[in-house]
Length: 129
Image (cartoon, rainbow, N blue to C red; front, side, top):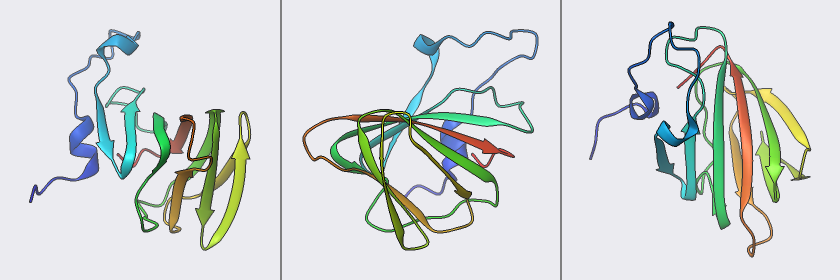
């Protein structure tokens, strides 16, 4: 068993003097079931964090809802359809729909068609990963 925080998986060396981050250089991490995240903001950002999420057909953040920190969090669906469950209430979202919640509230995301991929963008303030 690895003893890492999820944020440890996104650790990168970055310089404030280099304001452009190239997507081709981004490193992602698999998590949940058929899901991955790529951090789109540099590690030195104190007030905002963006993550790009990819869900394979039927993929999810995991079987159980999870929490992390106590940030304001917005999930925006870029492509596909997902179900987002927050505190036991499930919301069906499709492209360009969004939902907001505190990251301290139990939440789960799952691709909802079972036949197509989904992409989402998470924005958090302050950063929790």
